[in-house]
Length: 545
Image (tube, one colour):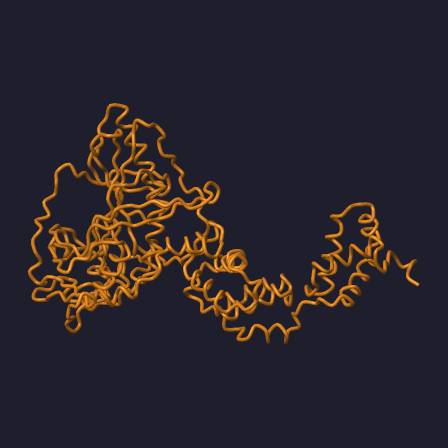
């Protein structure tokens, strides 16, 4: 079934950017009065990375033409039945294990009834009462470069994780008084992750979201492209005096980045405190977030509890999970928890700690490496292939963070989209630390390996063929030094009068003369000797005999 609405305007896809060092990201400071404390819980809707929807075979490609990914079931054609997507079940089970949740061997689906134009059935299939997983926890790191000496670890409880289907998308034209519906997103599989209300401010919530995106991305269960809507955050926010029961909460919907989570939560906490201190009462309502002003605004109230008329989904049997590790026989085409457990990657928190303790990286290096998509894999691949004892983890991290990451930022891309060969990068770094390759040329070649990885198949052969090898021979360096000394007698005199910084100018002149191939460390030593009279000095043409 294909329906096209030519008036629907699709959002332009924005390329993703690599992650950088965390700096202070709070723009609205949390209230510091001890009389009040913020209480925040998050609901995260993560779109499952699957080729088809949760209950139908329709595609899930982002920005596909309007209403071209809609099956008969997605548009509520009578007589059509849901068929559960195994990939979505596996994604939810993997995520639950990564979040230390209790996976339930039996879970069920429910119908949540409400009318909205982009939900053709009039109900959403979800897991309200018996979700696939409950009672978990996640540890996350808080590290601000300009403030913290090392990451501060916090833990937050996970209330439950459930599977559910997404709704479509409405396009409203208030001026002409009509709305258009795109059902491409209707029925896409979601994981709803609900935390306990254990955050105190926006900064904590934002760092949690950042850490969760790392976990989901590492698991491969969600592409975490928040600007495309594949990860959406709702924040439930209230304030109370220490020791008092929880206050009336407001829900801020559809926060599209960790930065916006930070700003929205801190603003809403400050707003509620100001309201209470002025004698007002917080209203249980749904609020939106204005990006331009970093403020929240009311959308609709929740004072009357809406009756969703939950009922068991009659067209889906209970979802059963099996575990061959405990001796269960796993029926064909069913999900085996033991098999999934072998696919769990190292958690970001554990990897970060290993980088700091075992590999001796600085906290800033560890945090940034872990946060940049694809960079940990390249980093560890380089360490496995490096042969020089001088190619230490610290050196490798420094090169990746100062050169490779800057290149990716210029390209507005990540390493996931580039087939950078870790072995060739390892050879390049080895050559630098063995003083076979000048630093300037090293930077150019590493930049080229990231930008155009297919152009250099053999780094060492490429360096030799293009005459890029560093010149360490003292005779050749000395000849270049003599030419520079002869060309700049005034600078030589300044050095002899104690102007040591001028020696850097002369060293740079040798660098230019050698086409960046001179060993600059040796060059500076040679120049110093020659200029100060400890070697064969050439001061000007009159003294050349």
